[in-house]
Amino acid sequence: MKAHNGHLKFIMKYFILLIAFISNLTFAQQIDYNTKKGFVANGYDVVAYFNNEAIEGSKQFITGHDGVNYKFSSQKNLDTFKNNPDKYIPEYGGYCAYAIAIKSKKVSINPKTFEIRDGKLYLFYNSWGTNTLNLWKKEHVKGLQKKADQNWELIKFQAP
Image (cartoon, rainbow, N blue to C red; front, side, top):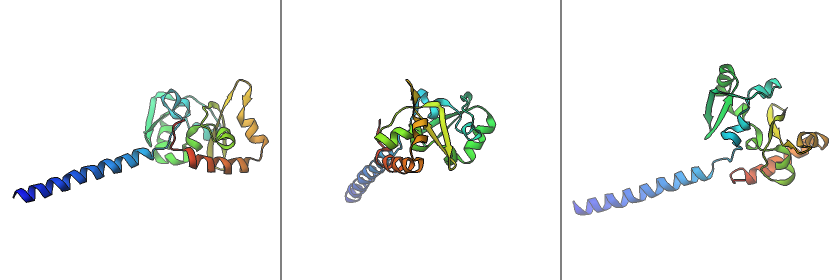
């Protein structure tokens, strides 16, 4: 009986270590989202952007997805998001698309400065006389998107 208990303790010890290792891997692979003010897109309604509107969300309509929180301006937009969240999540974790492309840096955004392109939401920095959406449009956008996609793959799990 003692040998059996010793073997069982050995198995349990390594099982617990395996679970801890797997959970650390999962945690390490969490995408770093820009959650200024505690919400993606600074609390603006990511569904409303697809109607070409930058609308701040309400505390009445909040949900979580992929470990981060989102606010919405209506129950309808909240439900729309819940039905297909991946469609509405901003590209590059909600960081400035231009900064990701050009500098491979995570830069905060102005939630009123956005673009919907090819069914995806891109957010941009716009402050102190620099509107990166305008810079994004001046350059070859498809080339910038490709570069941003490449850079994002390298930095998406890193804190800014």
